[in-house]
Amino acid sequence: MTKTRFAPSPTGLIHLGNVRTALFNALLAYRHQGIFLLRIEDTDQERSEDQYVQQLMEDLRWLGADWQEGPEHDKGHAPYYQSQRSDIYADYYAQLEAQKCVYPCFCSPQELAVSRKLQRVAGQAPRYAGTCAHLSPEEIEQKIAKGLQPTLRFRVPRGESIEFEDVVRDTQRFSTDDIGDFIIRRADGTPAFFFCNAVDDALMEVSHVLRGEDHLTNTPRQLMILQALGLPQPTYGHISLIVGADNSPLSKRHGSRSLKELRAEGWLPEGIVNYLARLGHAYGHDDFISFAQLAEQFDTQRLGKAPAKFDEQQLKHWQQQAVLQADEERIWQWMNEDTRARVPPESKEAFVKTVHPNLLFPSDAQVWASILCTDDWDYAEDAREELRNAGATFFEHAIAALEEAQVDWKVMGKVLKTASGKKGKGLFMPLRAALTGMTHGPEMSQVLPFLGVDKAKARLQKAQLIAASERLT
Image 1 (cartoon, rainbow, N blue to C red):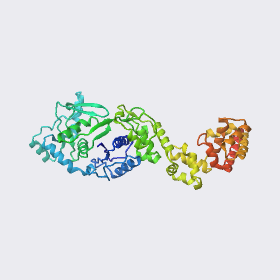
Image 2 (image 1 turned 180 degrees about the horizontal axis):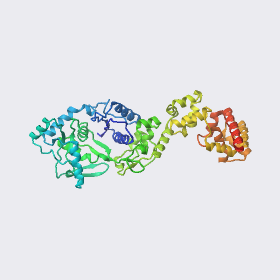
Image 3 (image 1 turned 90 degrees about the horizontal axis):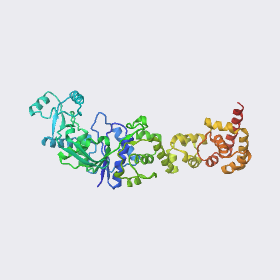
Image 4 (image 1 turned 180 degrees about the vertical axis):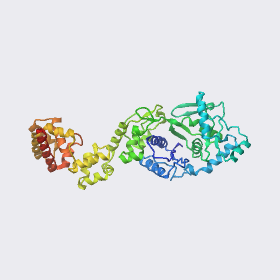
């Protein structure tokens, strides 16, 4: 069975990079009717907070990436919080100690920093120099007696090659001579990422791990741990990182926000999913499809090696598609409270139908609720320019055309065209500007019936006065 996992550290809100990692793992699991596992890697007790755990679970559910195993869904591998798995880790530490695969290290952070600096000066790659690798039992006891708290380092064998097949990057080889002995338990007794992440993947029977390419050099270390413990190894795939337009790692200055922030702004989950699923993965088409369809067509062979460039305009494109796909009741509920309060109850369906194709965010609906349902708006400067250019006589003809056509926009246009001699943009743009104060927006064949004859006439009369007065000045 295919089992994937998402294993975040709850030290903050999840952003688009984390979200895409979760999404790819969920899509891979769903593709094979497998299990998507959620594990909370909260060994950093100083920075981990429960509020972030609750928020990320809410975010995943909102996105549609529900987990089948993990918190609230025990499948026999609990606990799913690493902070609650200390006894499990202790057993495996003891096993490694018995095999002499590890040793205590008493080097201070300052001593390690000096060592790395000297290595760089000498043109060497910085790695642990093995200072404590051969301490005698007596030397170890003396240091502990002085109150020194050691870390625990994994003893990396020399002269070997670590090789594995990466489902994204093909065959990967690492020389153990390039890997220094690394810490698997911190001085405070908490497990290091290399250790607990690998052990938990094995014990929870994770079959596939899709993670960022920045973890690629972690993999040989974790494979050595698993081999020493006789634990199964998952299949790894290291996906491309998301970068901004300048090819630097994606950050706030590129438009990256947390999923919580995006949700508050009115982004729809279907749009985010359709965009992220294509960010570093090729579907071969640009159809807007459901989560289930994205999973059905997900293929690790289509995961790209090159950095995935974030483009907010593309994200907005998929947001637009998501809005257009949503039914009218959902769009109504998506609109903010102020918008719904401005629209008369009897006009709800007509309002949504009128503005739906022109919405990108709830704030757009708020603007149109103000324009169509109240007089609490003003003309945009380009709309006012249209009124001046059209002239007062044009709007005199427009009022007469309205009275004849009532709310039939097509008939009104024909009547006004004959009376004014205007056509095309010169005919319709001044009308749009007069009735909405804007030079763009919903179809006027929907706007005019929504306004009704009386309100439309009042707006045309106001436009006539503006055209006359501003043309004189």
